[in-house]
Length: 352
Image 1 (cartoon, rainbow, N blue to C red):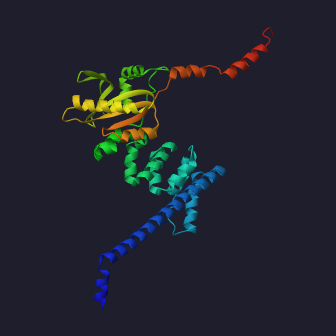
Image 2 (tube, one colour):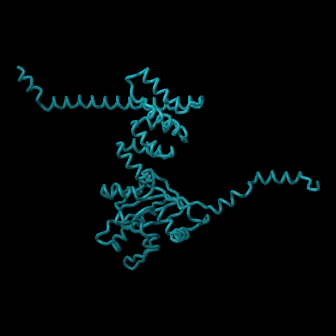
């Protein structure tokens, strides 16, 4: 009889039934652990706030934290997690994000990560806004603590909003490396170019300041040339800037565009990348990457454009300060200030 019962349960239908039960239990466990974690991190936030406010009303300083530890041990001897060091982390946790421009958002993100992740970010990140980026990335990509540590070391926040198609045009190890080496935004604040500049002027300024330009691009970029000429058939084509990346082992052609991104810009860049592969690339070189630098872009449009290319392409913004003009403008009085000054002069008796 028992043997017959066992035979009844030894079939695919019953095994699927057990698998469904197991899945339900695991889902419930995950939900429960997430809820517990949310409550725990919220508790740490509130305790950090309470400690901060109490310290502001007293002269105890860290002595207060030590006393809290002792009193909690007496009142709740079997409860762990409230050592002086952890209480100090709670205070830091609250103070750090409460200084952010969007403390509520930071708190909502932080509760979705384990406490170990949050402590790692507190230890390694100095700016709340940058820390919030890592909170977002860790949640979005489900990073383990060790991965989060590596991403912080690699300054992954610099590439957080990247627009490129590397994930679909390059094998995984190469795509990850390209993502880590090419930024989503470049700062050309070292230039003294005036407003209403043209693309050729920007290009000239960048190559004149090639050392600073290479530093901004990052490690591994080697300058090949400006207005680099390639002949296809009977036609000559000139690329704005051509580089070779030593780690990526491939050429990177950069096109500079003033103003908003336009679809035809990417068509031109894609053609240039293919042309370099046909005319310049050696057998040991990997396929060329095209990088379009624009002063303004619609990221939604940009993403649609790059995803429809089989050539590895990226789009990034560049920021350009105008220190000379800004300094002059800052030193000049406003119209209202001139009006007040005029009234003062009119009502002043210089003869006195």
